[in-house]
Length: 207
Image (cartoon, rainbow, N blue to C red; front, side):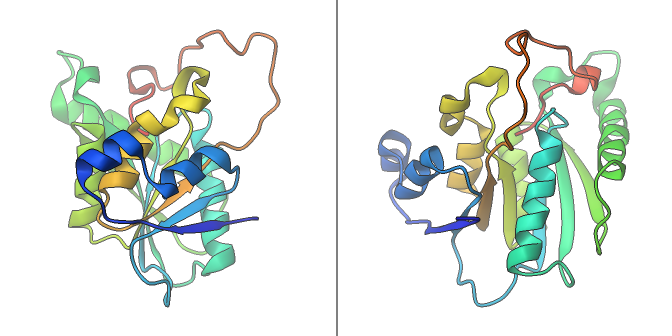
């Protein structure tokens, strides 16, 4: 399958945290993108909020998400926004909130310029704060129809991603969520080593 669609059942929050949902179990098992639908699919989403963390896997996740959307709905009439959230724990004292936002915006602009050209532009957005809360708030304030998250985990903990930002976004988002698993890449012998991220202070700040 090129896309799996599951419904998002509404359950008590405690039950969702402890037992998980059918959607979460599917996400553990399949390698295809999974659309967790909270609304009827009779029309294409008008506003799509993508998330980026500038990691090595972020670019292929970004491209795979747009390819999936283009294949299912077409991109002709969508508004696309890419969000980078900088966690407060990464805020260097001399830089400050605004300085970090400016630096993050430059990095996100560079990331988007390096992506494959699409019929519609992708608008950049940067927020600073708790990663999950800021993503969910951005989706609500922008009135997004669809949130896109990557399901990759850092440091190779691929089996633990459901305890990560991705799971929390899938659980708490006010809209449907498209979860994109990492694209398989060739592995090298030293892949277990931690490599400093080229973004410096922006390393691993979002999903």
